[in-house]
Length: 161
Image 1: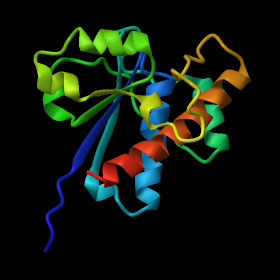
Image 2: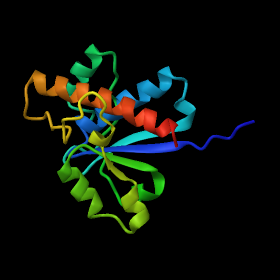
Image 3: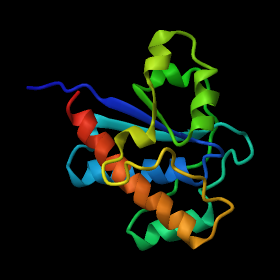
Image 4: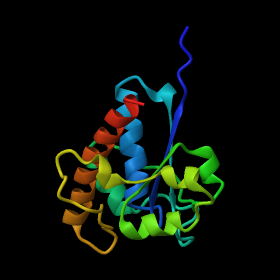
C-alpha cells in the first residue's frame, strides 16, 4: 500500500478576495477532477487584513461560476506560521512576493515561495496575475484565464515531485 505524502499549497494575493481564492477554487477542482484530492491540501490567504472573514469578491464569484467554479473560502491573512503548514506558497505578483519574502525566517521558508507566473504554459508573456479589483469584467476574465493556465502548470509540476 502506497503512502503518498500530501502536498500543501497556499495561494497569496493582496486581500484574499479575488485572485488567491480563485486560484484555490480552480486548483481544488483540477485535483478533484483527476481524483487527486487526497494528495493535496489547498488554501489561500491575503497580505492585508481588510477583508478577514469575507467571501471572495462577488464579481469574481460570478465570473468563476460562469466557468463552473465555486469560490467560497473565507478571507484570512498570511502569517509566518503558514511557512510551517505549506510546502508551496504561490504569490500573484511582485508586491505579494516581496511582502511574503519579508516574513521568511530562513532559506527553507524562502524556497517555498513561488510566483504563479512560473507555472504559466499558454500565457508565458505575463509577469504577474494582475489584480482585477478596480477593473471591469475583462479584468476578471483575464485573471481566470491566467489562473486556469497557471494551476494546470502547477499541478503538472506537483505531480513531478
